Image (cartoon, rainbow, N blue to C red; front, side, top):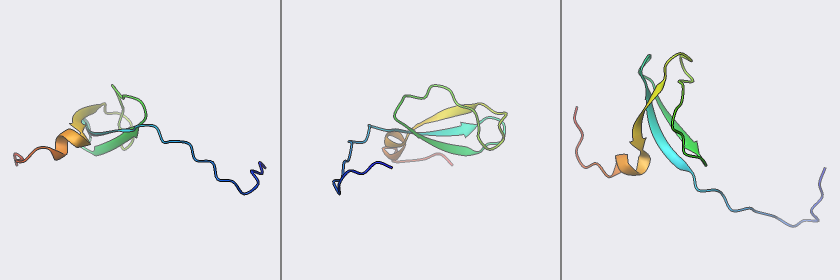
Length: 68
């Protein structure tokens, strides 16, 4: 065990990219928060469908009207 002598060391958090994805197979929505840009992902719910990027959370929040 590492003893730091009561000092607290906090490293700055990396900038995270928050994106929203939809599974083509089971229609689940998945959010991915990553320090890296994700270009391709597979569904953790059904494990067979490839996820389709819906957008970043920042760009989704900027929409003022939504289609039903």
